Length: 191
Image (cartoon, rainbow, N blue to C red):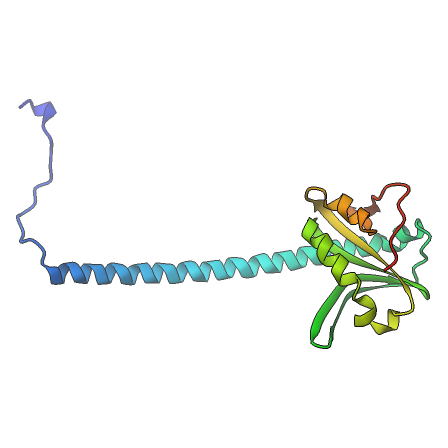
């Protein structure tokens, strides 16, 4: 055989074939290593979920602050004179927890605004169900006219149109301000 075409295999001494007990030990050691790797993956997943939740929560608060900062001005353009705004109204009514992101009030009307980073159709449906419960959850508003609004940075599919069709103010948060983007002839639904 030509020296250039030789295959260089490492030289190893001959050893006895492994027996069943040795194979079983290798299997147990490998299984132990897999379990440890899986535990580490689970810890990493947990940390990623915690960080994601923290980021989402902080991002949501930032968007809420942006929308709330412009809400009085925006609603005045729709002939709703806001006297004050409240953020993150939480409570429990007969065992049901509730939370409203922003409430803008005057003596006869309130506007409840749900804030989402990304508005999805399911968010519109959930808010529609939630707003009907406001007079029950917050009885001090039971004699007031209630309007709803959905604020967001981005939206998926036809969620903006769906929100408007259900009678909600549609509020897009952009840059350092927010804008109501309903059509010109939009009339908000009274809840």
